[in-house]
Amino acid sequence: MIPRPFEYHAPRSLPDAIALLSRFGDEAKVLAGGHSLLPMMKLRFAEPAHLVDLGNIPELKGIRQVGNEIRIGAMTSENELIWSALLQDKVPLLVEGARLISDPQVRYKGTIGGDIAHGDPANDHPAMMLALGASFVLKGPDGERIVPADGFFLGTYHTALGIGEIMTEIRVPVPAAGTGWNYAKLKRKTGDFATAAAAVLLRMKGQTVAEVSIALTNVGPTALKARQAEDYLRGKALNDAAIAEAGRLAMSICEPVADLRGDVEYKTAMTGEMTQRALRMARSRATS
Ligand SMILES: Cc1cc2nc3c(=O)[nH]c(=O)nc-3n(C[C@H](O)[C@H](O)[C@H](O)COP(=O)(O)OP(=O)(O)OC[C@H]3O[C@@H](n4cnc5c(N)ncnc54)[C@H](O)[C@@H]3O)c2cc1C
Image (cartoon, rainbow, N blue to C red; front, top):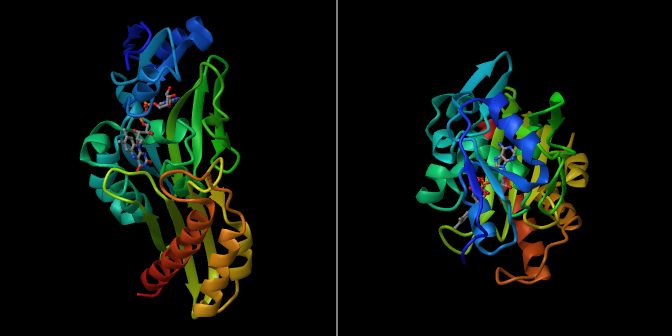
């Protein structure tokens, strides 16, 4: 449980951080809250010779609105998301989801950028990002690029981030007025990752679905967008039968890995349950 020796770097600006990463290449890793990276280093699944700590770069923190978009610095902690009046008002899905991440200790240090960049399908932000249609600002030696969440997650612990690139900002379009939301997460106990979870955004036109977005946590190599369920629901009356069918369609794309949280069948069934639960809650919030 002791990591390989490494050199610690604490740059005070983004250009300095990028320069360090360029200098050390794949020998370096970015350190954010450390709640995923340090356990991996202790287990020697990750053995970086250099750690570049982003904790002293003020521009990587904060939450602001620019036009119809919320922009969140990658080093913003889970608790800062939860406490944000702007997010509570404009993107309550993120607040609800962040509250369900682990325990207070993890939420004080763990960052939204680290949660996304880690590429762990068990993490909660990836599905929320897919449901929200977010995009990520990545900066590196070759400049800046903006990558949509849909396409960023390439596999387990594998994302579109290149060597030497830093995720600086998360951009979330503000959901239209009247949009209902829910992040339904089944976990065995406080502090645990999801057995299965579903993020839903929903806009109704009378009794029928005008727009819906559904994404799933921890039931595939990456977070999954439940496109068949979404396509099925658009334009339909959102009654019990439609909700049950959407749950079934969400289950049909699951490829969970059996572990102590359950076997494949159980996790798949729980995905259907979470999808149905999230749709019901989003409906009541959309219409209330
Ligand atoms: C007991 C426990 C329970 C947990 N439960 C949950 C849970 O229920 N749900 C959940 O979502 N998460 C959970 N986590 C994970 C937690 O949210 C982590 O904080 C998160 O996965 C990583 O964020 P971090 O800021 O700690 O990143 P770090 O651990 O510092 O970094 C993680 C990885 O991302 C890279 N990275 C970090 N920031 C950037 C950046 N800005 N640009 C480029 N690369 C970057 C690092 O190099 C590293 O590879 C849990 C963790 C623990 C210890």
